Image 1 (cartoon, one colour):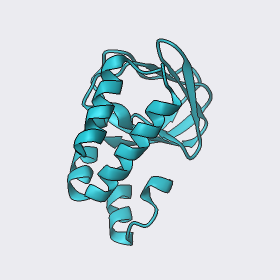
Image 2 (tube, rainbow, N blue to C red):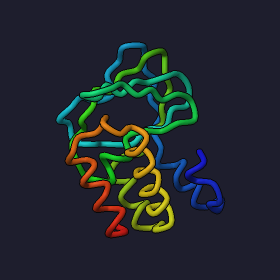
Image 3 (cartoon, rainbow, N blue to C red):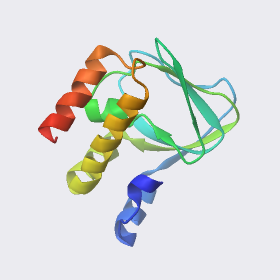
Image 4 (cartoon, rainbow, N blue to C red):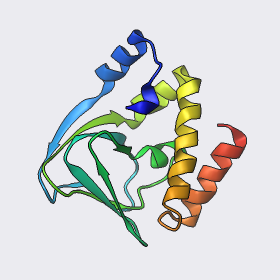
Amino acid sequence: VPIFQGFDAQTVSELMAMLRAQALNAGDLISVPGERAAAMYFVVAGEIEAQLPTQKLRFGAGEYFGELALLHETMREATIVAVASTRLLALSARDFEGLMRKRPDLKERMQKVAAQQTQRAEGAFSENEIKAATKIIEDGE
C-alpha cells in the first residue's frame, strides 16, 4: 500500500500485527449509514462498493477505504457492500488512532489522501464530511 511506503521494518511489522483478516461473500454488508466508524479497510482481493447518497464508488485490490470517517470521527455515510468474494484487512479505529499518534508523518499522509479522496468524489460526501476534511487540512490535525 503506497501510503506505508518508506516506513521502517519495525513499523510495518507493528502495523501488520494490528490488521485483522475478513473474508466476505458478494452482497455481504461491511457498514451502513449511521454506524460509528469502527475500522478502515484494505482490499486484498475482490471488490467493494460504497453506496453514497449521490454516487457509488468502487474499491479493488490494493485500495483502501474508511479512513475518512476515522480521520473526521464521523458516522458512516455510505452503505458499503462486497460486490464479489472479497478479502479485507481491517485496522480498528483504536489501532488507527494509536498509529496516528505514534506516526505523525502517517497522519499527515492520510490527511493529504483524505483531501484528494474528497476532491475525487466531489458531491459524494456530505457537507459535514467535507467541512471536517477541510478543517483537518487547515488545522494540520
